[in-house]
Image (cartoon, rainbow, N blue to C red; front, side, top):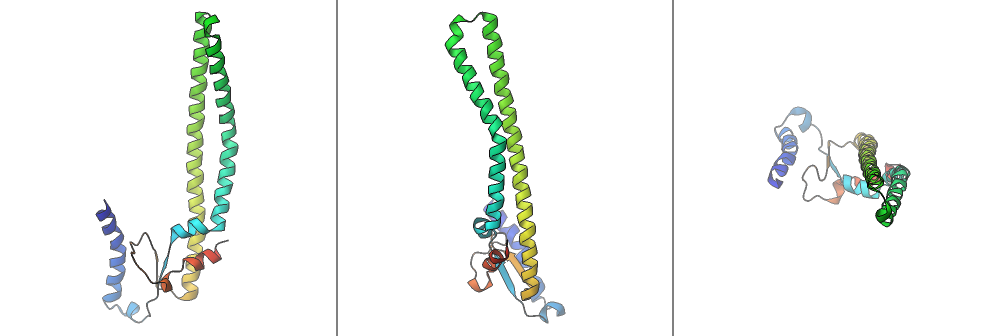
Length: 175
């Protein structure tokens, strides 16, 4: 699997170098300026992205409150059932067991819905962050005349000089 991933990551890199070294007049007439950035570092260190994460965490907490309340209610119902099981008739026991089962199913459904909402919020956060980072990258590329900018991990880069890493420039500009 790693070998296949390496080959896939190598394809765009080889394509770029093929174009550069085939001597096309447009590329050979320009000075080649390559930049690299580390998306994972940006995600870890960006105050803006941290703010997005905090918004999501707050939203999740609010949406989880009803689930936690239902779970507490279910625990109380189960405790009451265990304490009173001896004094209950067959029909009362069956009704209470059914009510407990239905409540547990409802909680499970609510948790699944929350998981879906969390995944959607995460996708939205990622799209929002990517859009902002892309805008900054284009700005840096145009302003500083970069020919090519790679994302460090996606390009399969194992080593690079710090002089081509523009991650800190992106971090300074991300709001």
